[in-house]
Length: 112
Image 1 (spheres, helix red, strand yellow):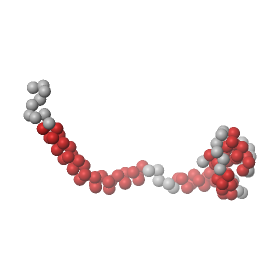
Image 2 (tube, one colour):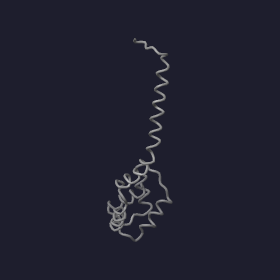
Image 3 (tube, one colour):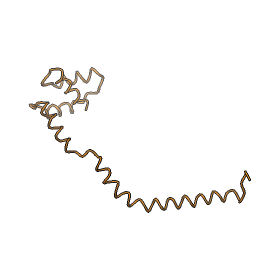
Image 4 (spheres, helix red, strand yellow):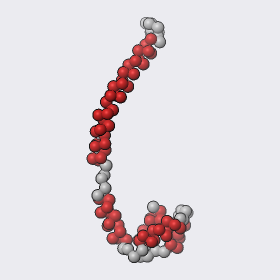
């Protein structure tokens, strides 16, 4: 992400085709580590492409990604049906534990 951010900063600064040296200078100015492989990969992917078109196509791809609202409900529905039996068992176990605790007082209370 930092390499992409450096690339976008260079483009916003007026450099339509930033080089690896430009990106290294930007990253170095903020003390970030420079990964030459990532820089070269990014530059090879964006070579000859307009950044505004790349951003527009990325937005189109993100628009088709589910936002998670409907997915969470659909995923929770099967889990709720299957979780009813274990929940009942847990309640029974809690009741059993309460009886054991009441037996610890040996039939009398300190405040009687």
